[in-house]
Length: 77
Image (cartoon, rainbow, N blue to C red; front, side, top):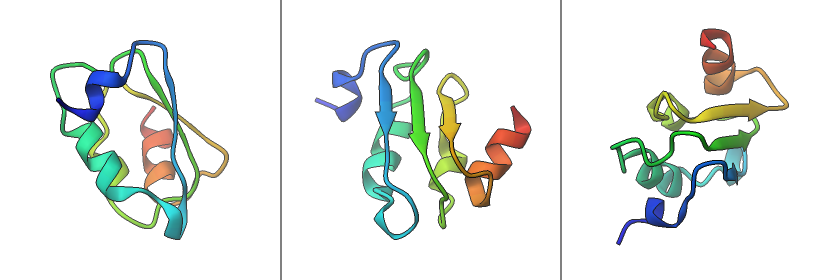
């Protein structure tokens, strides 16, 4: 069973930022593939890692800061 099995379309996922960013948890979610995160949204702050670069295209990103990886993803749309 994958962590992504517990996520439903329309869910809002919230992740910590900077030194509290749950990189292993996010990597597991993003690695689930097959569109399981389509229609979900992720709310996060500034990321000091590249884990957000691996977010699937169907996952919406909400952030209160446009710096680091979050800034690149927000700029890309």
